[in-house]
Amino acid sequence: MYLTNEEEKILDGEYGEVLRRCINLLVSLGDIYGAEKLIPISSAQISGVSYKTIKDIGLEFLEDLAKEDVKVKVYSTLNPAGMDLDLWKELGINEEFAKKQLRIIDAFKKMGIEIGCTCTPYLTGNLPKFGEHISWAESSAVSFANSVLGAKTNREGGPAALASAIIGKTPYYGYHLDENRRTTHIIELDENLISNFKYKESFYGALGYLVGKIVKNGVPYFKNLYQLNPKNDDLKSLGAAMAASGGVALYHAEELTAECKVKDVVDDKVEKIIVGVEDIKEAYENLNTTNDEPDLICIGCPHCSLIEIKKIAEILKDKKLDADLWVCCSLHIKAMADRMGYTKIIEKAGGRVVKDTCMVVSPIEDLGYKNVATNSGKAAVYLPSFCKSEVIFGDVDEIIKGR
Image (cartoon, rainbow, N blue to C red; front, top):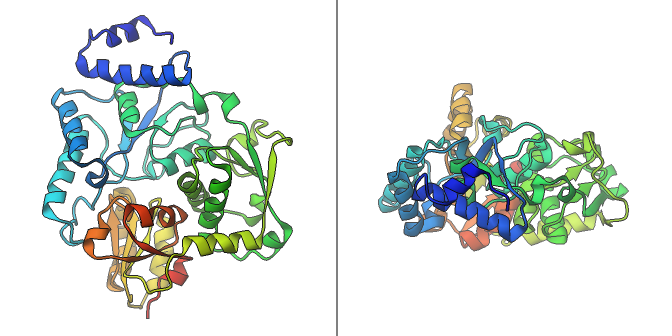
């Protein structure tokens, strides 16, 4: 890799051991993937935040960094933590878990990272422009940034995204290069599916699950998805599910996503896949692992927008829930839901609007929850392995059964 004089000095340790270790990680990644240089980034989004996932070794690593008084060079935000940072007691989180989780958050805060703790940073201020180079780690956020917004990022690991935030640069390879952002598969919905489509937000999670399994870490192009008129929340769900079932970090959709509107991203010679009604039915069957009633209903993977919370409040008005409900969102969206009165309606029905965390990275398996209902294709993929949960997958108004 070519390094500037300043980068060489950092690598030689002239600016301290912490910066040397950070740039060494980035240079090593660049060498592995054939990057020619490091490039500046405008923002970072950092994973590896929940104590459930990083344990004591991750906590110690972050506290060691924070002790060195190192600060991030670019606007940086965090992924969800393992609990609501304020209401953890009410949710039944173990006190020892909570103490260590708060130490993790404090370490990030000392480094100058915004501690909003969300997987949808683009809804809360970390909103990159078209063509900007960024270093993001959370898989669904990477998909949304690359695809819907047209920013450029690889699917970074937590340490690499943190190192990029501290150095302000990332290796120039992968999805930072236009030639790697071209289509590998064309996805077309068949006429029967299009003509019989009745809006269900969970459909996009099922479609994403199906396509992700087929294309793995490819770049799918949705040829006629626009005919279903998906909303931004639907595109968020679609990308999240493809990232979970496969390794999709970028997709294109005709008339919907950023790069399709300004450049040629598709070659008609690539493999074409037709998705029909039976394929979607099979996806729903695979994502549902039990016919039992849920102990917990979880909405918000990725984190809910205010529009999604409004819909839940409308469903629950003057009703009582038959199971616990977590509506997961960011601190920013929760504040607006409070102000709009949505939180009060949901709480009156017996649910909670939970911020900072989600059902996947929170220790719900230790809270006695076995059967979890969700409208998220991503959560339906991860819950059985991450939380040892059985899954009921379906639309919001199907899984929220108030009386």
